[in-house]
Image (cartoon, rainbow, N blue to C red; front, top):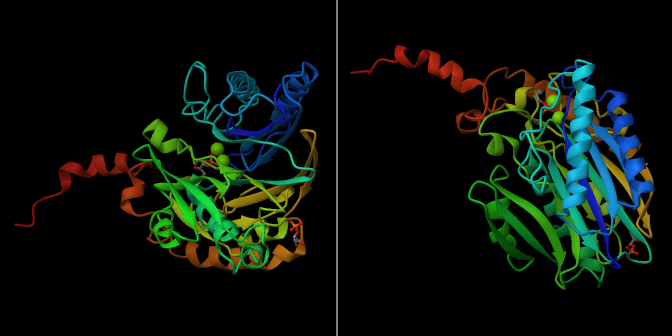
Length: 366
Ligand code: 13P
Ligand code: 13P
Ligand code: MG
Ligand code: MG
């Protein structure tokens, strides 16, 4: 047993209630029961089960490190049994994100999203866990950039000696399975060239300059794994706060801007990301607008003290209002871009079937 703590957030959509709008309480109960058992058997230190929209999220702490077979297998089995419950209840899209038939060592690449980090717990260790629904994994790029690289968002970058050196960004090219590391602020413009294209280049993790992990996200892109549209990624993000990392308020601040993200109805539209309390993470209008929740915990010997529901604060009312205004504007575009995704991204939706049907009807112009 090492001294280090691992925080694992593993999530999947195993069935929606009703449609893709929310989570049935029986699935939460099932996952809670299984994780309570695992805690009794000392497989994990602590856990918290939650849902953002129709996505079931297992938040776990343990000492096994990242990519641990036992933790991944247990998570897979929990999703399978929750998926059985979902089938029994006739929930929508039961087993939606479980793309493989059998577990083979690591849950990555099997459909669920994974955000895990291992670190030595500080005397006080505040962490934030962000979870989103009706959007894609790239949705964290802009907020992460603001948190860890923009002094207009994060005052500490300029005025705190412990953050002044900046951070190191690990960026994944999820289409070509490559990675690159950028140092900020030195390489800010190089970094932005790539992370501005959030469908392909995703911030996987962020480190201090002396290589202490500060943030990790799930970068699994369902459509790229499945080769077709089966649902949106609905990603997770873990951020350590205070001290050499952004303060809690600095990590929450980016969500006051209703960022336009990919997702919403049928995963095929751009829409604004609305920060909401957990209770309101139930996207209904046009299956949206996309939602983000933030759970705050203090770690104590690996125990999860919390959560605090961080967006349950009138400070985010204006962001929610703006999201509704933008939603009205975008919705009025109906099936027109830029509300609907560009053709390239529509390749992974149901559109190709319609295109195929009309293939023979196209005639040369001359
Ligand atoms: P720390 O430097 O202790 O993280 O606190 C900064 C602060 O006061 C945040 O508002
Ligand atoms: P989810 O990815 O949340 O299942 O949403 C799918 C969808 O098609 C919503 O309209
Ligand atoms: Mg769903
Ligand atoms: Mg979802």
